[in-house]
Image (tube, rainbow, N blue to C red; front, side, top):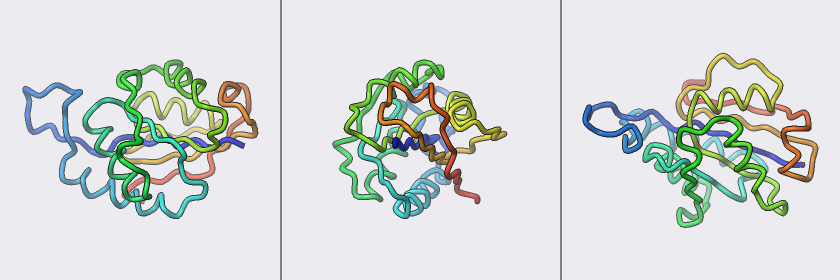
Length: 162
């Protein structure tokens, strides 16, 4: 059994119009929502054995807040540039590269890619994936490489305003 957490980054700031999209930080709401979702994540079983984040500042900050809330070392977070601006096939390539000894992984990234993946992998039809939302999918396989070929199940979908 494999468990995959797909987390959309928390709400980001648009205050600085000259700032690049990649470098946008969290806004105050995002700074409040991420710890709230981290507290909810603490109640989940299994916990992620690996956390991989987009290189965007807002995604990295979200990943750090979630990780520290569950006792996962910030220094163990993997930053993967491919998650920023990724297409679903790019994310699936990242997932397929995961070590098979890991049974639970978390990716922190962006929409519209993540909502597309949740719906495809979980065989569901979610309309939206709000900022800082968390989708938890399980798969009856022992191989990350086979994830796209097995029917996944969306076992939880949570977001800050829920």
